Image (cartoon, rainbow, N blue to C red; front, top):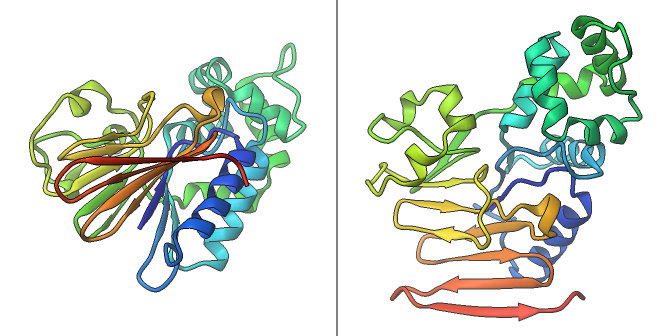
Length: 249
């Protein structure tokens, strides 16, 4: 299992990380392996369009790849539907970078949110929008539960609210209870990957730090791999850590 954190338009880091995973983990994408992208593909970084196109093609060609919806994609879909509040929120939090990557002009003087949403939809394309709408909010594989932001503690994993899966923060991050599975998530930026008993956080702020992180997981142990330069942290069975840092190939 491999889970990749928030990409936010950093196509360069996404492709570099996948190349490194291919080179360093012989079987991470084969057999029972599965790739999960934890949402927030778009906004803030320069190449949202390339990231979306790459991941869309990947899910169409590779059956063991899952791309989850993040809160940034959810807001974009609301913008496309003509929601004025979502439009203001989106433009304040990185949406202009996505507009630039699709060669779309920002809202024009006198252009209402419905007209802007229609213009946005026309340029992004119906196939891509439909693909975004079809993204799941979570997926479970064995002892791991994958979602964008986290879960509401004390509620069954099968009954989580959409808003919590997309937006939850401290109420989840500060909770030390057993959730019934280890929750692998992004959304909340950390300096280094957080590996806890009940959760693994892998959003290392790629759009501004140049550090995109993946969690590589199997039944007995796991690693986190982070770009710039590639740092691999192996969590050994007795709880110690081994850090390996390698420069770019």
